[in-house]
Every structure is written in structure tokens, then in C-alpha cells.
Amino acid sequence: MFETWGKSVGAWWLVAFAVAFARADGAASEFRFDRDTFAFANQTVFEYHEGHASLRKSSATKQDAYNRHCFVMCRTAAQFKKFVRFEPRGTPLDDASLAARIRAVTRQAAWTEPLPENQRIVVPGYKDLKEMSKAQRELVQLNIGHGWPSYFRISNARMMFQDGMGYQERTHAQLNAALARGELFVAFLTTYPRFSINHSVLIYSRKSSAPNPGVDHYLVYDPNHPESPRDLTWSARDRAFSYQKDWDFIGGFVRVYRVYGKPLQ
Image (cartoon, rainbow, N blue to C red; front, side, top):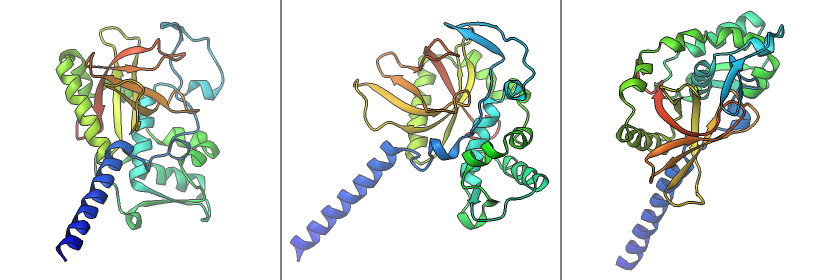
């Protein structure tokens, strides 16, 4: 009897350990890039070449005019993930009703717990955020919020006095803890006092393995790049984050600050 009981306890602990490990390593696994992100891109105000910015040529297309909304898009993607239930077999709403439904989502406090399925805001006629934002691009852009208030966020001031390695180590620990709890982590990336990047992204998963010991890799939704996830890394040796090189960023060192994790953040 005791042998059987011991085996049962051992099996229970093994399952518990596996679940805990999966949560910590798989992070917010329910967030899917191909489903839970916007189909359109946030456009930058400047054009970049090897890290150097220059003014864009004027464009009459509305597609190019949608810029400075990276914070808004990250926040809204998190809100849709936490507070919305899509019903693809339902009848799509008319434009006015859908706009009101979207605004109802964005009024939810982004840092609060996800709603139970039976209490979520229902969006019929679409299977996910990607499909809805592709079909109703302009309507979505007009109703998720303005971009300019992000320049005046109180929490932005952290970049001027909380820039040390110790703060970034604490941010790294908070990032891992948040992902282990299944949360999404909206981040402000900056290289202040330089402005090679001044941007917001949504970190949704920690990769299960890394080629280099002491380097953690994270999957990132970047509103500037709706085509595929981007890569953020943490180096234990350098005690610093790095963001991947792309057309809009020369790549390398960035400081990371969490936003929308609590009020006034």
C-alpha cells in the first residue's frame, strides 16, 4: 500500500513539475501571432537607413498616414486577447455597431484580469483580430484610439532616471514572472538619450531553448512588422536587452520598460 501511495505521490509531483515548467517556458502560449495581432502596420514618421532617420516623402495614401500608434496597437491587441470572444458564425455588425463594440473593448483597463468566456465582449462575423482588422482596416484604425497621447505618458519619465543595469535586471525578472503567469507584457523600448528607437512592442512568449547559455530569447509582436514575430534577447553577461536589426532599427542594445501592467504605468 505504501509503495503504491509513494508511486502516486511521485507521479503527482512529476505532473505538477511538468505543468509548472510548461507555464514558465511556454509563457503566454495561448497568444498566437497569426490570430491575435493586427493585419495592418504602424507606419513610422521617419524613414530609416542603417539607423539614420530622414523625413518621409509625402504620400496621399491613407495606408502610409497611419503612424505613431505602436502603443495603441499593442495595448489594443492585449485588450482583445483578454476581453473579447469572436463568433465567426454570427452575423457581422454594421459599421456603427462594430465601432461601438471596438471602443467598448478599448475602454477596459488593460492591466486587469482576463474576463471569463461568458462575460466577454462578443464580436460576431470574424474568427479573430487578424481577420477583422484586415476586413475593416480603416474602421479599426479610427476606433482603437489616438497615438499622440503616448508621447505624454507619465511612465515615460522612467527612461530619464531608471536606466541602470539593476533596473533592467528587475525588468527581466518581472518579464519572466509575467509570462510564467500567462500574462502579456507590453514594453516600451528606448535608447534614450539617443532616439534610434522609441517604440512599443508586445512580448508574448519566451522561447523554450536558446543556442547560447545565459541568453534568453523572446517572441515579440511589433506593430511595425505585421508579417512575422520579432526577437528580443536578454544577456545575463551584459545585464541588458537587445532588439533585432530591421529596416527601422539598427539593432542591438535597448532599455525595456513595462507599460499597461498597472495604473499610470
